[in-house]
Amino acid sequence: MNENNTLDRILIYGKDFFLKYTFKSAPLRKIVEAAGVTTGAFYGYFANKEELFYALTDDTANGLMAILNSVANDMNNFPPNEKIFKMCDAYIHRIPEIVDYLLEHRDEMKLIIACSQGTKYENYFNMLQERNQDNISQSAEKSEQIHLLSPDTIELLMSGYFSMLAKLITEETDREKMIRSMTEVARIYQGGMLALMQEEAE
Image 1 (tube, rainbow, N blue to C red):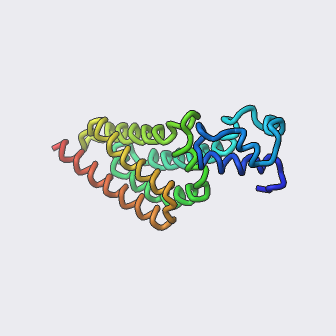
Image 2 (image 1 turned 30 degrees about the vertical axis):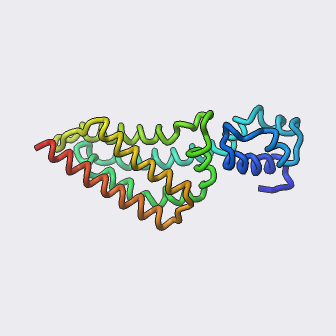
Image 3 (image 1 turned 135 degrees about the vertical axis):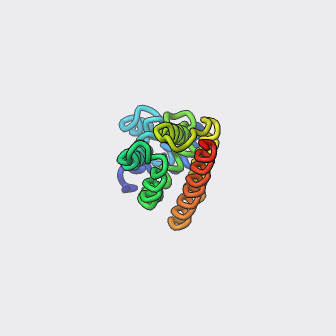
């Protein structure tokens, strides 16, 4: 971004203030003052503070969703009765790509995870978690070799995984540690869930 460009200055200082104060508490007047522009100039680009927040986050949220949809497509290539056993491997294979994207857009992900109350993204991670839960449940239902875990159990497991992911993003964890942590925890979850499902099926 170019500090000499009015729009870029609004985006730069908008991001700074949202990260520091969150969307809900960031004062638009302070953003405009820090950017060195008039309120009229701001409204020439954005109708309100919410539009500014989305200008900073929409592309990142959509880009991550595109990657996750691609991972889901990879999983769907497995035969239905095998998917529950192989879907985690498909995810783990794509973890480096996911991590690289998260790190490339780390500030924007922080906005979505920790600063988005009052916007359409305040439940974004919950939505991703629910998608995962549904995918696991639907895949387990199509296998005759295992017993489906209760929705409450799957929800608790996925809540723990996404809480870990949020922590890795917001705490400035480096690439190698993120990949290692996401992979190891995914393996633990995979082994534990499958073992329990198979035990219940006996």
